[in-house]
Image (cartoon, rainbow, N blue to C red; front, side, top):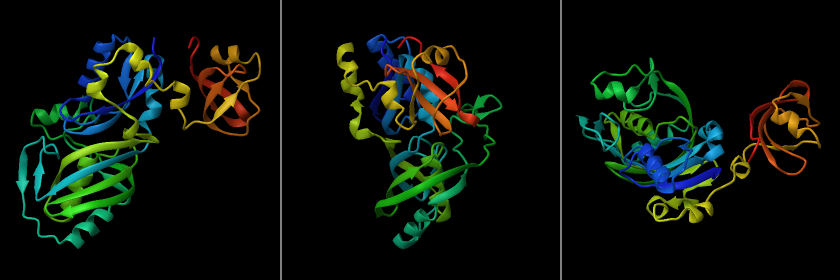
Length: 291
């Protein structure tokens, strides 16, 4: 079994789930998942988890993201991107300076309403399932953080920006909100995810190239779970404590830190993820007995 993560550059014109299914089928993999969808019309970085790496999916989902997007002012679509149907048109009378001011005004924390066509759950159903039936989903605002926005170019009605943001941010909603602030609406004309945490699209494998590879070729691109979880500090257990950790027992460790940690055996073997609580008590959360 292959265990770890794989960085894939998703092309436009395929769903995230279909991409996973094609890779799974091509390499005959038993376990594979992804850490966050990209829209059908979007491209860029996807982190796939393979084998026992699938057990750690939740940790990658919380990482910050970076996107490059082109927005088109003066039109709103039902999906907030170019894949949707235009439901409103309004001439954009804003100047370039006004567009810049509106864009920069979203840097910081703000309450964002997810798009109707999104994977948000409402009473057990996905928002897009309701939207497809013509039912307007009752979506609640979510607090998101926009760390920075770099303006790449403005050529009204288009603007291109690079956005660094927290997990859970919808760029489609951000672009629409920018348009709404300018009283003309906007939708995402193109979208590319360039970073997830420190993982960069520059280090991805092209999806089409991937489908031409053998399983041996694939192994060269797998990032081991221990390395992939770079954002957690490591602690090393004393001899004899690895079995206690693997059996789910709590015990005191000589580390003055709190929170989630990667747990390593005295023989430098990755054992899983634990949480150090009050009084330096280590609680096993996810253990790997035979990796």
